[in-house]
Length: 456
Image (cartoon, rainbow, N blue to C red; front, side, top):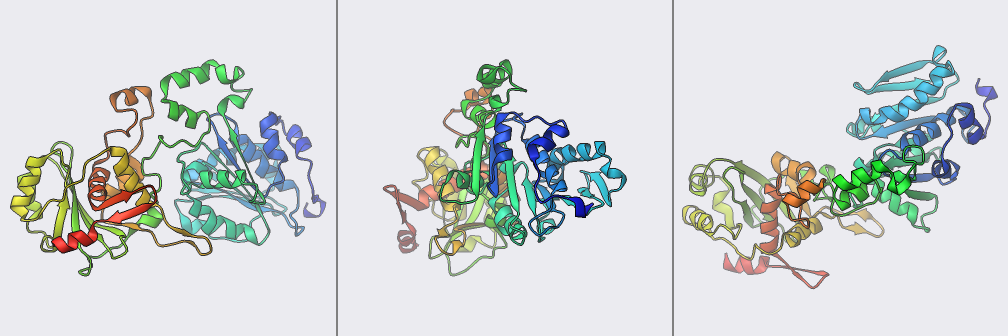
């Protein structure tokens, strides 16, 4: 069949012949000639059909080298690829392509989703959770599904090189998760809005622009019901397809691939501790070092429940091998009695100036999480690293600490602040950053490190 494949295909006629009638905004994406496209979608917008049918059409047209095309569907997990894969699976089944296919596999649990037709067209599903599966070359196209949960690194390190040989195209789609360049969808959408980025195009598609699912548009009863339940920011994200700050993860810049490392104590750098008090909620103690360039390293963690400050100090901290190197600790100022107990038992000073507004402390952490980027050489070394042994801190930074989603949650919390749960490690970090670093104006950092060394 290869010899009979065309070099061009009328997609609109093909869609009609296979029972697909895209609405106007879906057609806008299909007609775009941009090499890299990104859609920031509200829920139930119809991104699955757009991606599935876009990939499906490549089976019946040769690439620029007059060869059958080869592509991937990439998601955070294999199961995320299943919906788009199902679109073309069902179409090809109706066309009886499965009868002669060389590969015809569909197991989302094992990730074994692979179709290879008799004439050589090939598509496979890959998972970003298994980076080794993303190493490849010679791809003609890639669908990046649930791209709000993919990292930019997935594209820059794996997908773009795989597309380079054949100048292949990509289509990223998904509901937005975070407004940060760590997110592939945010990064791709931003590039698509920048006219100077040739070959990139992006769209923001609110749910209510799908006239089939939501015939009432913005005032469709389903839309209004969702708006009544969700916080304003969460509604804008889930149904408006907008990138919003106060939704989802609080530490949006956190990236496991960037901020986790195998760390060791460096005797040349001062050692500090950050503390968040608790009893039913965990008492948290973090061991922290700072190098000469104010890069921050979290070496270890203690999360302890149902013990008071004196018990913890005597049983866990006093005889810890790092204690002899400790310069000072940074506590929550709301618990002065516990602070006095720690200072007395451990014979170490507490540093203050750790209070103030929560948003300030969060801002200091997020600023340190951002990876500096050189205009020529790209991303530089991270300024904040956490040892891989700090599993609880890692979970809170990467998954646990979140903004309210529903209005009843926002009512229980200050609507300007994140949820007061799964935040004990970040709370301790915030105390350290507030006490150790001071902001001067809007652009400068000022460190107290020199003063602390004098006091040491």
